[in-house]
Image (cartoon, rainbow, N blue to C red; front, side, top):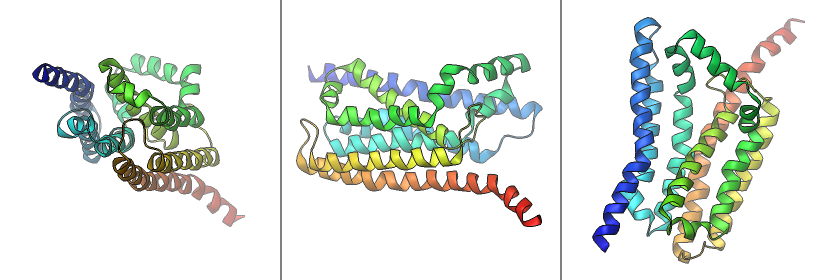
Length: 260
């Protein structure tokens, strides 16, 4: 019986890691195709993508994923890798820009039209992205969903996919590395970001004091601290990029004012 569960676990991990491995292969292929006819794609963006993929794969397969089933602290480390660090690194890799450089002009126009659509406008709004990201974590850790996730293979896979996608959506709604047809103001994004980070921080403190069902108090305390301080480190990078973009966007206006 133990061997059977072990085999299922390996199969599930391989299945969960497959989309990220495919994303890595597609990205590298796109770089090679793009470099044939256009200016060389920046190496640092490829490095960002590669490291981001490694973070995501480490969170859903291998030793960390195995330990996460028994250790809530390991689970929380996986959350930071899958839902925060991997999305940030992969957003910095500008995959949509690379994809648009690779495909034909008519295909690029259709894709751009899709990005300008109403549903994408709603999903890419910082408020929507924050609710899906931080709100989803509140639902996961303050209800019985966390316990159910470990008892249902399909639910386990769906939740991990949601954590990554919501984290990526939140990141690209805050910092514009790729083309963003539905841009919002820096003030609006900054306000939503502060509120979202506050919600994330409060949740980490709630976990510290009120462990999810089945989680020992010592693991909850360690995980709450990891979520709080580890999340802060990644959030600082996100805040720095947003502020840097804001400064660069405002700099020409400041120059114009000084001339008048």
